[in-house]
Amino acid sequence: MDIKEQSCDTTASDSSVQTDKARAAFYASLGEVCPFVLTTLNHPCFLGDGQVWPGKKPAWTIINRPDSVIIASDGMSDTYWDGGTPLGFGVEICAEMPGNLDIEAAMSSCLFKLVRAVCDDIAYEPANLNLFQHYSCISLESSAPCMPEVFHTTDEGHVGVILGYSSPRIPSSFSTPYGEVRMLPIATLYAKETLALREADQDVGALRDQFVATLKKHEHDGLCFIDRPVMIPDVS
Image (cartoon, rainbow, N blue to C red; front, top):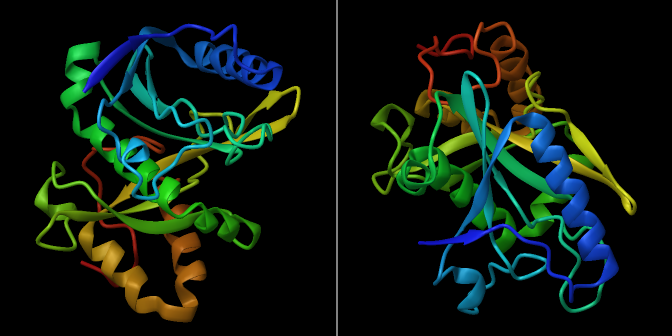
């Protein structure tokens, strides 16, 4: 793991600079932004296995709030490195949990490992973002063995998440000179909920919407790693 102080690359294209500024301002509006970003020295993005971020600089920002912490991707909306097209994937991915984290705690936290795993999956297969043309949110399974077993759907530690969950705690998008960047918060699923979505087949969209509607009634709506009832009817 590597830690880098945030800075603006003055040699980058104008679109990169403007997007960086807009994203930084948006993150600052959410809470206290750590002056360092999390990145990795040997990220798959640099090893040629297909997980490539638009600007080839995978990074994540830590944002502490009075009662919670957000870890958010910082680069999925970068200008494409090879063509100069602004806004990259057009999204940033984030998750929030109770408490605060300093830089050292964030590096080893399950929150960061979860966000990184989901980002890796999207970077490997960005076409999955096309599903947002048909659904308000999507579900997927990512490798996060750090999470408690109640979330695990495989022996390898895969867990299910709702991506694009409309958290009341995080605005749905932020503006740049080149258009809107959508924020995609993560909501974690218990294994029983993920398996129910798997079995729903053609009805998965309706069942996912039902889950989201139920989750929104919870007092800690929008936070990961909280105790809550299983929220899909007929699953216990």
